[in-house]
Amino acid sequence: MKATVLVRPKPGILDPQGDAVESALEHLGFAVSGARVGKVVDLEVTATDPAEARAQVEKMCEQLLANPLIESYEIELVE
Amino acid sequence: MSDKPRVGVVTYPGSQDDRDALWALAALDAEAVPVWHADAELPELDAVVLPGGFSYGDYLRCGAIARFSPVTRAVIDFANDGGVVLGICNGFQILCEAGLLPGVLLRNASLRFVCRDVQLRVERDDLPFTSRCTAGQTLVIPVKHGDGRYVPPPELDPAQVVLRYLDNPNGSVDDIAGVCNENGNVMGLMPHPEHAVDALLGSDHGALILASLVGAASARSGDALTSP
Image 1 (spheres, rainbow over the protein chains, first blue to last red):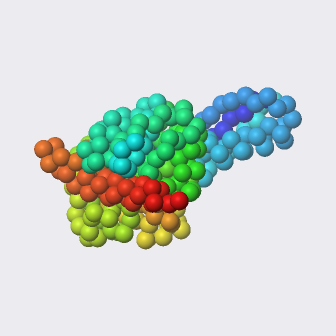
Image 2: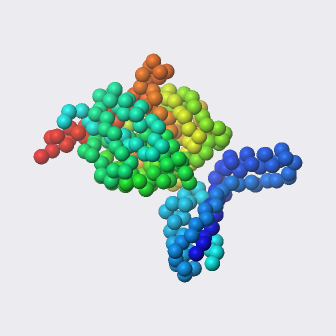
Image 3: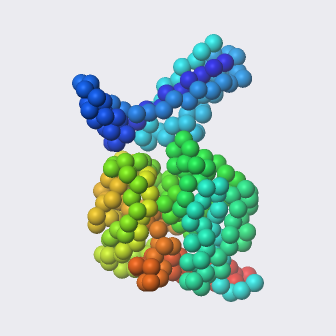
């Protein structure tokens, strides 16, 4: 089963990358605000049961993929 | 075996400052012992240094992968048994990711790699890492990092702050440059004391921190010799 993990900087955590992207977009003439840069992790788990797969990916997020102090995560499963 | 205290320096894939750390510790009269990342057990050691660099390419987050290497698990056990552990730069990031130190280090607020001498205020002189310093003293030690912005957990006890920047180079919260754990046997700092042990190279203030560590290791080594 395929899973996509979205990792985002938590609100309130200074995100200079987001600020830099926002300012570059402004230079290009776009009216934007609130740009934040996170990351995407695509992976495949051998579990076929969605609940089991989700539980495994959640553990991965807690142990490695995200740092709970500064990042939140969201899991999407693709069957 | 010599009577010198044995201080291990871990080499991860991507470590850079391991050799400087070994050299500096030897210059300060320790027996500097190289330790390999794949070793699941530490040799007989009185203290451990995790050096600077870019372990595992800084993939995912700085220090996030190194935290799971066999040697890091051994270092965690060593620290939990009261062993003295110092993390410098990438070593600091690894100790944070490993949960031995509170907080996390993020991209510099400027988004620029910063490489220069910084001034630091010593907040505590009662630790194995600062016994040769005086609280309130100003140290000049170089930093060189792109990810040094320290973000503490909300519950951080201010007493765990060991060093503060006088001229914050990276946007660290509360100017924090170095912190210790609650027990005071684990410390991490972004500046590089191993690059500042000879006045010929600009400053020898880093030697105060490393000599404190060697002194603490020496006391531990002495304890081991006198215990039955």
